[in-house]
Length: 538
Image 1 (cartoon, rainbow, N blue to C red):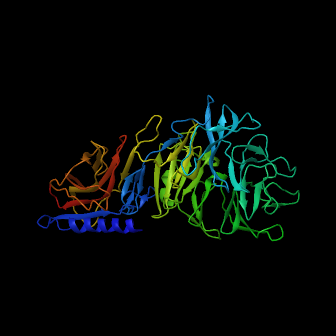
Image 2: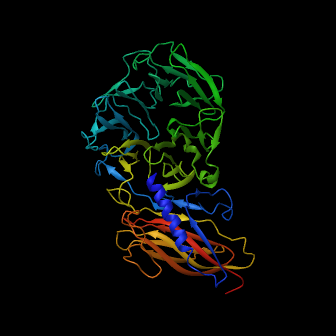
Image 3: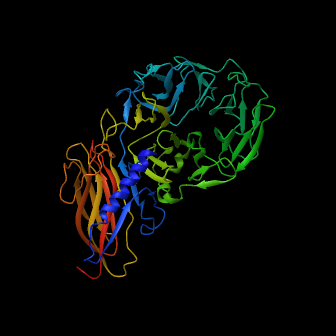
């Protein structure tokens, strides 16, 4: 909160300082654009969106003061190590697991040459994960597919894993170093979904797709042949997700959501809540007392657990149209509690057959951002060695990665540049009823330490395809003409650079695009000012 207030004060200071620049002798309209945290809006005309919204945005984040920063990259963990040694390897699931004695693990479900395998990676005492990955596979299952995505539930000092297969298997159980099969109780159901709630293990039923089962109170491995509940069995849809939230168990079907209240077999009460559902268990996540999920119709919804829902993807309709709807069942979702509660959705672009895009919903600013370069077939949130939550994701090549790193490039095996940009609306200044000319652009950006780092600004007018380009050097030292040194304590040693560019473009509307696509180069854009001349000047 303290840093957020300081950054707002800095932005206010910038505006106040810039206001002292006098262009009164010219008929120029000065407009200031700071706090550009509105996010992507591609659902309405590019001239009609809010001034702080973007027509396109990729691989940036909003910091606590609303500045636009290039996102950091990710590292492969452990260092540049594939999970399995198979020829064709895919990470179908990854989960964090902590035992009562404090031991911590990352657990991965792997498709290795079409065979189901289980691996784990331990955390060192008081430290980070340490490799290599350890194979604990028991009872190999073949004919395994990249689309068989597991669910996980931590309970009774164990990690329960339900894995969809063609064999309709009972759950697996990982207990820290070993993995077994929950087959000691003949009543344990074969399932593809598990969830721990009110000291019961809940599962779906692989054979009866409208039925859930629950274990004995406090005894994860004890099921009874009569301890099941049928959920909307006459609606011809299947159970797709089970989530514990708001003191209730929320049972998602393809076209409805049901709530199970109570705490044991004698008090359970089932209520149908809303007529909207989800296609898969991995698309549902909880952040800041809100359930977020992808619907079966390809919308994204925020749900408070009652009878009302909010469609939060309305502003990004064109982006949602790019989703490969045949792969809705394989959409992933997770949340970052230590990153302002942001929600991450991994989906497949309409031109692809694997998850190659991520939509980030910034819950602080109610804003959307697109990520590329993170190709996730599985995701979870887990701590690093300093107990700070990160996004861990498994890819289609057998690697598990951790985001964010501290570098501006993706990966530490073969590093890839991060193509990052923020594109504004088309500013048309309707209050100026004559021709207009963008004379000057002033850009407020923070310095970077990597040599020869630039922020590229593309300036276009009247829907031209090319435009003019300005490369702002971000490694300036000292006070230069029309540049200033700002409070170095607030920005952690970074210098404020005010770049002035004479543009001279007209005649009706203008658009700006800020970006950088170089390895190891970042940027922080605080805001910008435009100076537009009205009249028939040339």
